[in-house]
Length: 347
Ligand code: UT7
Image 1 (cartoon, rainbow, N blue to C red):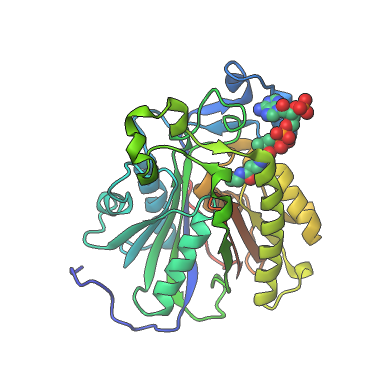
Image 2 (cartoon, helix red, strand yellow):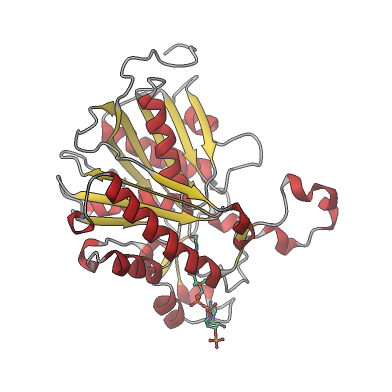
C-alpha cells in the first residue's frame, strides 16, 4: 500500500455492494433491575415502554475506538479482505474531542495511510456513513470502504437520569462496501436523507463543545451528559422514519408490499412497531434486537444487520429497507437486496 491520497478512478459510477458484516458487544450485560437500583423506574416499565430487557456496558477502560477495531476486523474477515481504500467511522462518542477516532482505528487494524475520518449524524450515522462511502465508490475515489458504527453511550448517559439511562447501550457494528454493478445483489439503493437543525436541542449534550467555551469553568456536571425530550423525539422519529422509508422504497422502484425486511434503528420498540404499522409491513418482517442490546445509537443499524443475518432472518434475495433517525435531528433510509454468501462475523 502506498501513501497516494486516493485510488485511481477505475470503477467510476460503480455501486456500493455489501460484502462483509461484523459486530462486537462488550461482555457486561446490564439488566433493567440493575438500573432500577439508581433510578425511579421498573423492569416492567422499561420492557413495556421501550422494549429493553438488558443492554451492554463497556468496561471503563474500553472506548469507542476499541469496539470499532473489533467490529471492523470482523467485517473485513467476513468479506475475506485485508485492506480497504477508506475507513468511515460513525459515532457520537469519539474517544476524544480531537482528533477523529477513525485514523487510530485504521492504525490498529493494520491499514497504514488509509483515508480515515469520523461522521457524526446521531443514530443515523451509520446510514450516513454508508452514503458517503457509496459516493466515494461511485466517484472512483475508493473501491473498498470499511464503514463502522461504534458507540460508548455510557460516556454520555447520566446514570441517574431516568429519561435516558434505561435506553442506551454500548457496542459496535461494521460493514465492508465494495465497488460492483448497480443492480448486483447487495448494492445499496438510492438514499433518502435529511436533517432539521431547528430541533438540535431535542437530543443534545449542552457542554464540552465550542459553543460553551466561554463558561467552561462554570458548567454543571449534568451539562456534560445527553439530554433528550423523549416525547418530542418520539413523535418526530415516527414521522421522519415513516416518510424516509416510504420515499426510499419508491426511489428503489419498490412498493411497500415488496419489502421482506425492515431494518429500523432500534430507538424504542414502540417507535419501530408504529413505523412498521404505518408502512403496513407485518411485524414478522421487522427484526429487532433492542430487547438484548438497547439503543446503541450509530451502532444500532449495523448491529441489527449482523444479528439478523446471523440468525438467518435475512435471506438471499430479500428486499431490505433500512431506516434510521436521531440527534441533529437527522434521518436516512436506503434499500438493498440481500446478497447470497454473506456471513456476518460476531466473534
Ligand atoms: O435514538 C435516538 C432517538 N431517540 C428516541 O427515539 C427516543 C424517543 N423517546 C422515547 O423512546 C420515549 O419518549 C421515552 C422512552 C424516552 C419515554 O417514554 P414515554 O412513554 O414517552 O414517557 P413519557 O415521558 O411520556 O412519560 C410517561 C409516564 C410519566 O408518568 P405519568 O405522568 O403518566 O404518571 C413519566 O413520569 O412515564 C413516566 N416515566 C417513567 N416511569 C418509569 C418516564 N420515564 C420513566 C422511567 N421509568 N424511566
